[in-house]
Length: 274
Image 1: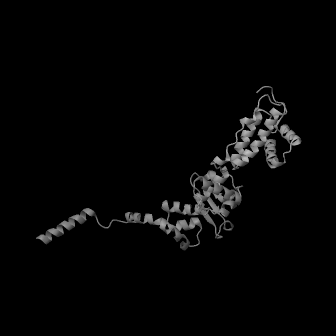
Image 2: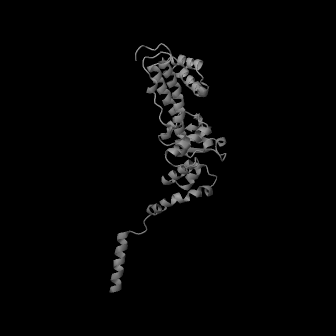
Image 3: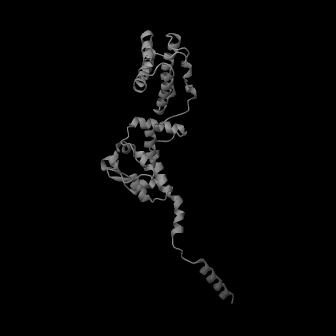
């Protein structure tokens, strides 16, 4: 890249602020400065700045930031690199063009953080309500089960909910740091990604009930796992159990042996004809 850069990105950012009116970009400059100070404080203007800026873009995507926000912060880095080449003679070749800014009009990708994914999946696979999710701490996890104390449930009664066999990873880092607003935003991203804007968070609760019914659990078990006060409440899911009614007949003892029945019918006909 020509001669080695002698100045850091943070020095370039400071010079830009001192020599130009940056008031319109103040908020983005602050955020970029904070990120570089924490993650790449000594990055020199050049390839090191490009590498750091691309990492910043990845971090912002993982954090669920919009493409517009990512582009605005990327523009701060691009501006410093542009001035470093055109005005300050810090670079032999222009580098600002090497940082891309996707068109926000074509933005289709949505991102959830790992914790947001865990909390949503846990809600669907355990039927936990939003408040119950946020109240969880390591002491609630015992022997592959979630033990909810009376003060943590809507009914005010203790409840035991089994974790899926491979569900331990969902509760590795309790309590969840995600708050109610973040969870709502995460759920909104998830439903947009699958094209189901009609879904509500409470539908994860109904989903759990449906999966229990499909797995063959009886209504009293569903009542206990969902924390319903009575079977009357659980009966709203009665239609989910209809598909299993026909299977009950196969479990009942056989009343007649088919071979014996056919033989008896044949002997009876012989007596009538004679």
